[in-house]
Image (cartoon, rainbow, N blue to C red; front, side):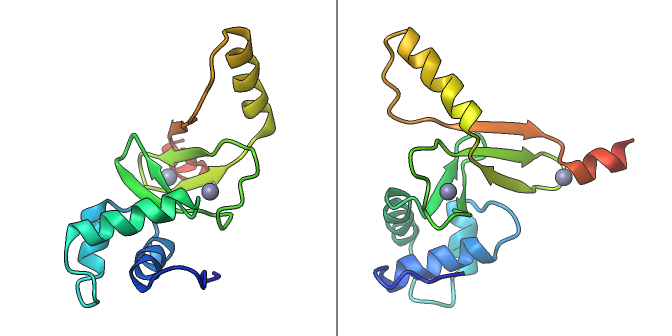
Length: 134
Ligand SMILES: [Zn+2]
Ligand SMILES: [Zn+2]
């Protein structure tokens, strides 16, 4: 993956830890993985995460209270970010689906609602775990 040149060293460490992880990480799990680096305190992790989220490079999964590296290097255009989360193996897929976006737009306009932030999280079983269960 690309390392953003404008990120601070701490931000790069946090982003890399998330990119290397197979599943979403909590702030403390990130701190644990970075304990041999310059990052020593939870606050440093939170600060880095905040900046990375502002740039769309990291997303917070609300239902897990955990973080993932963006699969599109922060390039979301106007699409809301949606996630499918497997509750069995921890697999997470980030996706942007225009029909989901359009449906939410339509509802908001119809109800005079201005959406500032959209979080779509599907929780369930991924294709693999689904197969095993059969
Ligand atoms: Zn993303
Ligand atoms: Zn699974």
